[in-house]
Amino acid sequence: MRHFERLVGCSSSREITQPNLDAFVLKRSEEAGKSTLNKDITNLRAFLKWAARNRFVAAGLEIRKVKVPQKPVAALSVPQVRDLLTAASKYPTLRLRVLLAVTTGLRRDDIETIRIGNIHFDRNTIATRNQKAGKAMPERPVPEAIMTELANHVAGLADGQERLFPDRFSPKKWDRVRAKMKFPGLIFQVLRKTFASLLAQRGVSTAVTQRLLEHSSPQLTNDVYTNVDPVLRQAVEQLPVAEWV
Image (tube, rainbow, N blue to C red; front, side):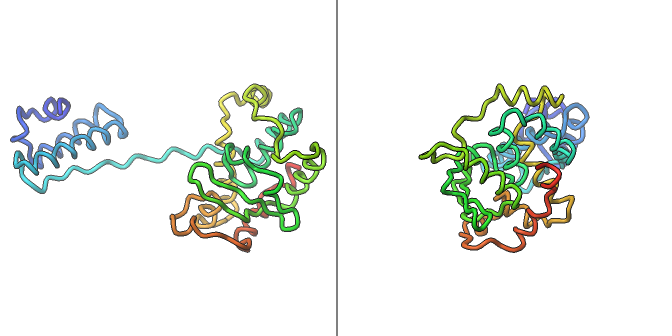
């Protein structure tokens, strides 16, 4: 409220009017960013709701949030993905993690939980579980070339190994790879965004990408896919895997 009183010059909540609210948004926008302004508006809305309920101000006052431009999606280009894989070649399990991220859109935590039994080599799919949402995709399509990489990796594992990765993700190795790539600020989450960006660049619809990222409506994400949707298969097959492996 101190911002509001200072900017529009009102001494009590009884003086709040629609013109005052409009003036607040205009003047406050001159000294604060849009995100900060929207936080102020959220607080003011809560106050107005309480004030109107207790008849301290007139009902029907409105104050709308301003639109905040979306930040550009941080994603790697095809050559950058190739450079990242080259830089990670010294660490085979890290390289495979990168490949899975850019060809499935899986989060790092979800990649870490993959078990060998989740991989369906006969169908080129992986059963995955979204740790964040607690939901599963029993048949996630994976490009054939990546399945070959997985098969070669699994063949070299010790008998009785259940998890796909016998080691844990190493932040130190990741830092070395980022430094070698001359991209010290690169975070693993960017690989998920890269997956989505590359699909969009190749004409894959937003609806399909949302399904692969499991960012869709609850009704859709709760569906259990017993077979691979041909549209999903077509989408992942458009990734430039041949340029990476």
